[in-house]
Image (cartoon, rainbow, N blue to C red):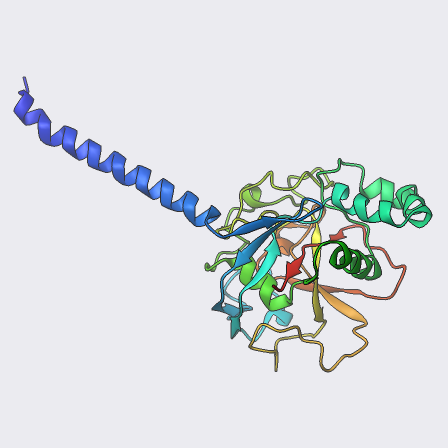
Length: 282
């Protein structure tokens, strides 16, 4: 029968292991929630992202399955501090913008397609937007909430998505824990912030709604900026803009951190899967 003296080292060891586990969990939670946040007048929470460098794009086709040539060559990008919204802009937040437009806003709220794709609650991401809608929303928000709002650049988006890591998706390698995609969404959007956040505390960067960014489309990263700025200089009309993040009706591969595609920016062309994640320069 073990004596009290013989049990003491075991008790001490168990206490040490429990303390280490608690410290590890606390550090993990802190890492996911320690960045400064501010919430604006229509309820959008912006997270302050620290400056840093990262490797953008993919190193080789063999890194992960499903990569495309437009993800190459990978390159180091230095990003300055900026803010990005914690979630995608929701239906309820976008309705506040439409309410400000009077009769035109009411007409849009009654539009059959807008209702069809935005019928999953005010906390779901707003979709069925044209690039003109996005620009108009941002212009309105700047007029009522102090200015500085914009779309993230493609480099800022991927930097925020990766959050210091190099996982397959935005925050890990298990897409089901991170985002809504064709395999788990029931082909519809879901209320934001229901899945796990990434290390910067950002939700739904993989899946749910696709997200416009500021850059014009280029077929690869050859000669891409390395300072985190938007790549627009050789396409002033920007007929096609980059879209990132995957969406609820897309296969999981579209939610990869490096996956990129494009959509047309001409007026009155609405995209049922595409929404908005804001950036802000302060």
